[in-house]
Image 1: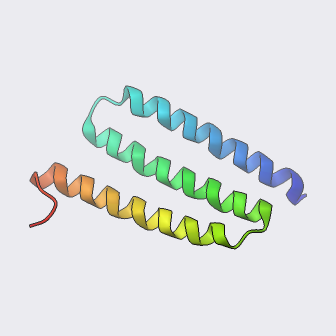
Image 2: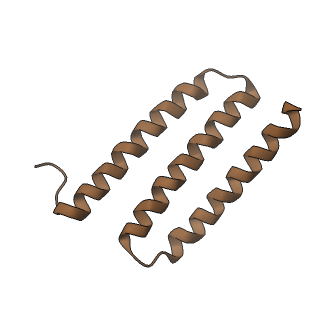
Length: 89
């Protein structure tokens, strides 16, 4: 059963990532683009974790954790820059 579920989930998240790229290109405001990039980070994280589950690799979980932290801090930095005009106070 897992042999069918993992490729299906990977395909679904890959499709979601492609739709996010399309939304990034057509987003009307900066806030929409920030939200799209944050959603892309979540989709990439899901792809990394699913690939790690499929290949039975523990290193992909560490890579996923680093990617999640980088995405979170990047989103916070973008939002602070958008609201205040500078990141560091």
